Image (spheres, rainbow, N blue to C red):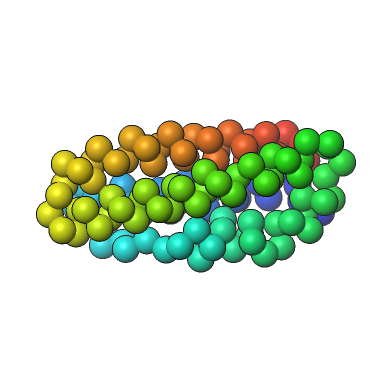
Amino acid sequence: MAGKAFFLMRLNDHVQYLKHVTDTLDGKHSFTGTSHTDCKLGQWIYGEGEAEIQTLTHPQAKDIFDSIKEPHEKFHTISKQALEMYANGDTDGAKKTTTQMHVLSTQIYNKLLDLDGMS
């Protein structure tokens, strides 16, 4: 059964991924990104996450879990675009794209925190 620390770990997985992206865009790292199904959070969402969410008794848990998928996929698409722009020398374009990444990240954070509150 999922516990409070569990959802905070999923949140940390996402934070660490975002840090790799932003560190690369700041010239401190050379991260190329992954698909939304290959990162740690995505592996959970498209793996054991479905079964773990079923253990929560809150009636909205499944809906919130399902609502993470779209912003998470968009986050990966946009972060990959930012990394590609940066690699191609378009640092200004890459930095502008980070605003969208952070908006999506906030949505993901909030949904994971909501799930944490239901556990």
